[in-house]
Image (cartoon, rainbow over all chains, first blue to last red; front, top):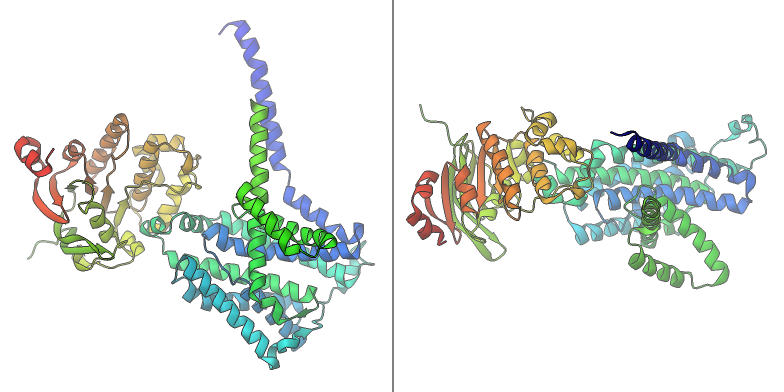
Length: 345
Length: 238
């Protein structure tokens, strides 16, 4: 190689190395941690109402991620995911209110109870495919709703279970800066922590060999089967894990909204969570949480201007499904790839 | 003492898609170490035979004996774990998983130990080692075909069902594939091959079954067809 060639090649190589390093630094920034820390500042920097919205988004994020384990990861469309949310809410609510059990026992019990119910319902559901599967999940959720609505002695029936106690959060006073926080704000912080841990676990599950098997089933169940994968068994496992996580979200929601009511288990709530998940993007881990945030926020903003919230939501969904089938996160990803290509060109 | 049963014996197999019947009593055998080819034009039942063996299309009649045990109607994952590997015609890989992940998933799914490890399949298809971090969706047709075969090998099958491996591939790629499959054969893998391409199949096969409209029209050594132009013309009307 001549001296001139070396001279031109070297700076270019150096520039490429810098770009590579910059990209490595960018991807190494713990974005998720930063977002969780920012969300944790809401009780201090925002109003009570902001904290209320942030709590709702946090709980819905976990609920939507649990649904996406079925929808996006395994390729199962559930129209009755609210059943497991509801079972979790009732288990936690009944244990805490009727039996005075501590939250730290009632919360995991809600997850286990919902997972157990998902095991029973899922055993039947995974025997069917596609639309039949979806309809059976809907049927099970309506059964849960009917029980919640009619079994007065246990669920409170139409009256529901109001005034579920908050967990004991006095220990938070020991943390500097938390002394003045209301019980609602403290519960929001606890919710944020529990959801963060749950999401971290789901994230690991999705990227584990188990998660990869679920991906192959979504991609092509037949191909997965002749490679030796017991498709139904894995679908059932995904169903149980998703149900358990929904149960945890439900437990948090019952306390957050100061009561558990049969309305929570009505099928329209299932539709809402499906919309959130699709709005955010089923193909991305962070799609459903983004969808949850967008939907909760949009709902607030739009109902300030018009009472036709459903109409606006329908229009947004229509635009999204045709314009960005990958959801909000999918659209951002596409934009990001285009920008990168422009800069490289 | 009786001779051990053949590795695979199909006896009077009938199969149908709904009301449309496709197979009318197919019988064939594959001995361990052999390469047997199902020859015939499109739609004569080659793929259906393989799908029936795999449990993807439960037969409506007949027996599928795997080492003497009737496996007709078994679920596909049980057939795979019993030691039958299937490389389907569509040669689709899991597009979102990388080459390595495709192989890893298959190895875990089949739960069969043996000589086929990731390194061993990289040895057979060196290109896959280079592409190991590439997603399946970004591979060329020939690379996908290699990955599908490699993925099936990860299950350490005793019998490999190859459905039209050469279809739609460029001549150079087909030649490379031929080389790979004969390497497999030399390593003692038993192969049941379905093909339309006479040259491809006769280069590999020990024995040939010619199918026509869901029935076996001719059975015999591949050498017979290789040497007898007239017989070849009559059976395959080329």
